[in-house]
Each structure stands twice: as structure tokens, then as C-alpha cells.
Amino acid sequence: MVSPNSWQITPKQPENNLPKAHGSGRGLTNRCTMVTATEKDQITAEEKFTRLLRQNKLKVTQPRLGVLKIISEKETAISQPELEKMLGDTVDRVTLYRVLATFEEKGILHKIFDLHGTATYALCSTECDEHHHHDEHVHFICSSCNSIYCLDDIKLPKINLPEGYQLQSVGINAVGLCAECKALTK
Ligand SMILES: [Zn+2]
Ligand SMILES: [Zn+2]
Ligand SMILES: [Zn+2]
Image 1: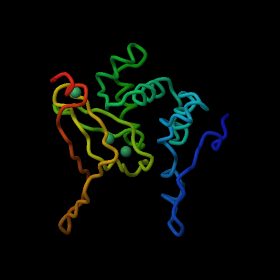
Image 2: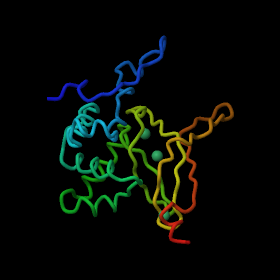
Image 3: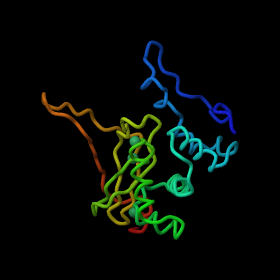
Image 4: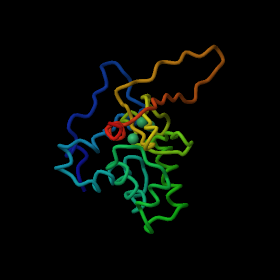
């Protein structure tokens, strides 16, 4: 078994005086390191996904590993039908549906609706956990190829609601042409 520290670069340190997230420290796990290049050299993708599943107290299964592998390799968000095609016969539809629902619940994936209202999925930021998603960024949707990109650096504005209201989600989509489609129009 790989020691938890053997592949961590610098785990996020909470500022002095700040309480630890949710007591367990789960919220500070370095989920994003799944995609950093230096770590790729030290540990295989499968080992990383295995760790991620275990951190979330999920059983390591082939369908779960398969979904993580595909999504982590894609730059854009991916829909269930697309995933189904890529996984082929290895995972049936009901299992895939459950895998996606569990991952969303655990803060591993977040859901974005494309221009046709189809749900697509992208990897979450490190701050997401079982209780809250913190993917507070704008999504870019290409009106030509329908690809969805997480614009991690463009944060959502803070929404101040009138008294008595409760916020459940905020979504801002920027719609336009992705670089590839834009190049085709020249
Ligand atoms: Zn999330
Ligand atoms: Zn495009
Ligand atoms: Zn996103």
C-alpha cells in the first residue's frame, strides 16, 4: 500500500486559528493532484483513483475506476451517453447512473447542463466534499460543438439574497465558440 504522504506535494495548510474543515480533514484532501504532472510520474492513474475512492469511503470497483479515468483524461465535461459509448460493454447503464450519482454526492464530480439541457460531468475542485460543492466558477459552453469547459479562474459573484431565502445553486455559463471551432470559421 502506498503511504498517504508519498505522493503529496504540499497539502493545503489551513491558516492559523482556522478550524479544520468538517473535523475530519476530508475537505482538505488533495484531490486536484490527480492531474498534476509531477505526480503522474510517481504513481499510476489507477493508484490515484483507488486512493480517491478510499478517501471517500467508496469501494474500489472497475466501473468507478473506468469513469474516473475517462473524465480525468478529458479537458471538457462529459455526458452520460458519451461515457456509455466510451466504456462500451464494460459498464451497464444503471451502474453508470449510480456511479455518477455517488460521485456527485461525494463531491468528486460536479454536474453542468449543456445548451440542450443534457447533464454533463466534470471533476470537482479540492474543496468539494460530501456536504458541499464549491465549484464556484463560470462554465464555457461552445455553441458549435457543445463542449463544456470549467473556467476555474473565473469565480462566480457572491449572491446576497433577501432575508428568508436559501441559496441552493448558482450557475453562470459563458456561451460562444471554443478555440477549435473559432479556428474553423477563419
Ligand atoms: Zn464539486
Ligand atoms: Zn467548439
Ligand atoms: Zn466546472
